[in-house]
View 1: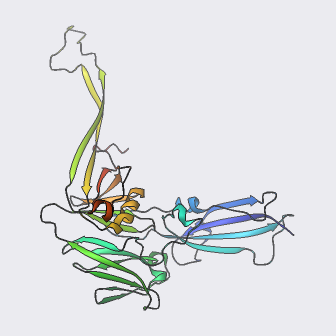
View 2: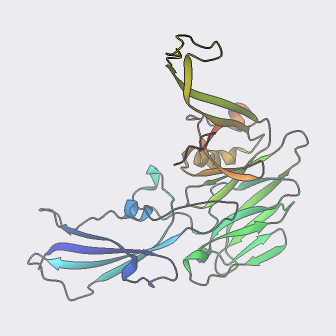
View 3: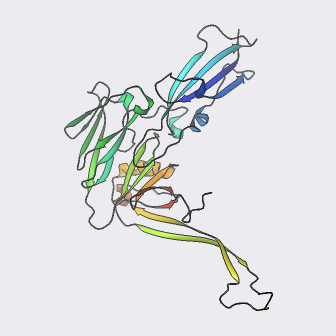
Length: 328
């Protein structure tokens, strides 16, 4: 009997794969086959994304979730098939994305979760490297090996390996500990004049990635307000005081923005800059706090060593909150 419809139950949960319960059921979808077609397509990515809440406080905490789709197939008479029914599809969910050129449902990188082959850190400063544990056996930083272990819990699927201060080379190996998957060069920058700022953003793989801005920083303050005309006449004396304002200001608030410059970086870092422009979540370590920011520069011209010799980027950011706290 031909396929007639499907029922999909979508569970989103933490813990180990398959450990969902009735309380983890988030959506139930039913869909009939379209006349003339032989399969049924269901889109669950946006539904799962509703339950991914990446937050960052310099802690690199996992926000990944399991997503299990339990699919029951029915024939054109509404009877459930008995063979391999239901089918269960389980995925690791992160807030990443593919490019158009990656085609539909791309399988993203399963080892080091950064695109570039370079990392820039201030001298005497440690860093973090996001990795996908199911595809990595060890990470070698200079001559020191870090064995990667995975308990199976979702919180272990993306881990952040500490890059010791003043390291130079990172090598990421597959689960056999011998297949070299990626080599990353670490450049330690001595910046005696300016204060480097660390920006952490959610990259295309759904991992927290750090990018340091080493050069000139400019801060700006933009105030918004409204005015209304007050009646300042004292009705009993029919006078008004010269110290009373006729044009009353209200709804005063402000936003702070900051312009950062990367300093000179390798052309390979264009990928990182692009992902920063496309991110929906970014934070800056600013005056002892981790604060949300939004890239406000909306266009970018890629710089290359051939066209520009030296590559650096100046990017505007706006802090993700009003100066005066008006949260109610």
